[in-house]
Length: 113
Length: 115
Image (cartoon, rainbow over all chains, first blue to last red; front, side, top):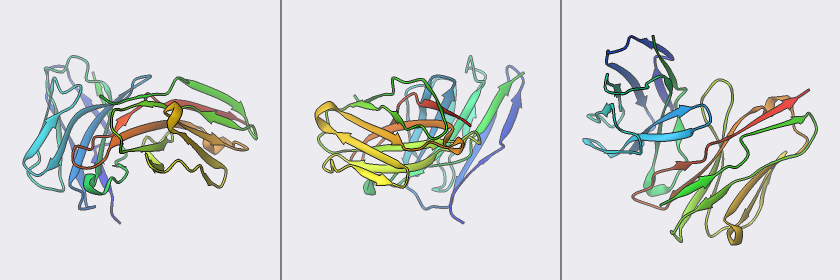
């Protein structure tokens, strides 16, 4: 079945550690996105990528990094520079030239302990 | 810049009531797309509807209906005869057409349907 897979579903991190969230899609979508969701804040865009080897900062990119070495994969690293990383992270993909809806993964809940 | 406003943070209804979720958007583009998504407790956003800016026809799908009014920049969502399974967070989203298409989401409306 085609879709987006995020892993892990739950992640615990100690303060000061970097952690990488995985996002893989087999939909052959060109664009991929990372959103952060906090209670009452809706979805805020962290990074997005519209083609391989290219990505752009979103509204809240500070303390995060990404790579897009393959079309299928768009991992997000939460670095120690991110002051408040505890949140729910959602990965999505779409086909911009067809104006499709975004397809979402099941999310990763990151907790800093 | 694009903006989506969902003024209702939380709505609580009793089963079988009708409920309308409001969405107001801002954009300078003449061609754009509007979306509604449902986020159940499991967390994954589920796509409900897409509407382009040139199509102002209302749409009905079962108990769901959508009212798009360009004159008021609104794209409201109504659930008729609500059910407990409708309990979720609902997001309205906006994107411009084509190349630099980045979905912008509202803050979401949490709908609680009581039995």
